Image (cartoon, rainbow, N blue to C red; front, side):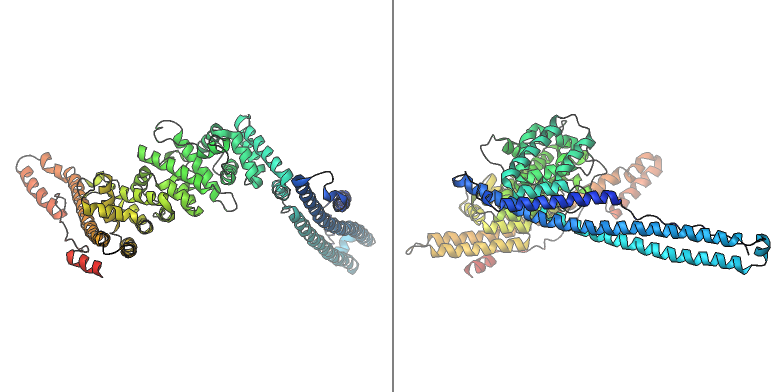
Length: 635
């Protein structure tokens, strides 16, 4: 047996600096004392704001009271933190002393074992025969080290647990001023204090917004520095005064520049600049005259429909970054009315250029939702739940043309919600939005012409049909005006489109039922308004109700005609593919082989369904004949 002396057990000191902690305890304790003095002083005569009169005196007194309350809460919280820090300091100091004692004890034990081994004259012979004296010395040392290791580990655990408890107290202490006890709390604390002390906070936030605007639009900062500046403002970017300072300082040109920087991916896919802009656009409320700086920024055109080779697509990608940043949990979202204006710009550009606005400019590593900026803007409008914003967006017939012509990644769910909001808007705005939708639907489909020229995507039309039908039911005059015009034979132009759109809308039976129910209520209301024996108004009302059944029958026939045109279009496309593939074989062969190949090719096209013919399927749609209309109207 070899008498091998083991290596000493490591006896590291616990983390922390006792001296620095002592200074911190003194500083925090001093802060608690002076906060207590301040709160006591503010609770005295100063609380009445002597020398101030009227509203100013009331405002000053309220501000002083708020400061006193904050000072009182902070004094208690800081005092608790100082007490807890003192306890941890004392424990850490004792732990350092205990580790020093363990080290001294360890040195003594090692000295003792070497002394015992040195008493053995022939150490090599003693190792061969496992001399009990040497064995006992080594084993005693090992046992002492094991005990020492456990004592040291227990000491480290005690210090760590106390440090965690101290951290919890410090974190809770920060909560009295809106902090979370983490790095970057300065912005959160500023936002909290600005809200509690508006007399100071509003001016401070406006100044910070203006300063950030100057830095972002006029400074010579690198992208990383711009991100850092914006990151510092994230926590209070949703404050109205900061937003006004930022947007008025940036101006339309400054915002355009930042949108281009975002669109060109200069600032990265997850940009703090985008987060700050989203919060500012969500918090800033237009006020003052039409030319006021904030109003100009909120209503400016950033994506021009006819700007084919300019930066509009890049700006659209920038808008997508801002909209996405606003959808992040905890971030400030763009206001619905602003998102509606952006959606209008994006949809009009898409309609004019024939491609999704900004989709081609979005960097590949961004969130896939950014590939459709218009879809993001519509989602924000839908989530906002504001009927006026939705109606203002959809009152434009050109916007409806784009809405019905495009594909929606969510199946049209958000767009259907926006249509429902627009239809729920009372008064002329809601009625005009609904009428524009029905008109665009009727103008985009026709029982004549090539399906390739239709401007309505059937899936998109189906997605919004129920919401649009409910909008017609809410603004029933949209239906009654065009139906009575049809009865009198005075339709034409736009009215024809509205009537055709109403017919196609009724292919969706829930939409048709909603309109029918509203028309029935309208007929009953007309009957109650009749004076004396005048039968004219009831007759007109009944005629309108009957005309609706004719419109529904037309819608069913129109739907069948559309299916027929689609079958024709598909058959012709299949024939074209066949003619340019298998159809070329007879021309490539000569003599009898070419003749034979021509015969085989002709029958092959018929067998494969590629000869350009199609079956016009039986019209199995609903029928609304005279008898049905008459019985329903009488009922």
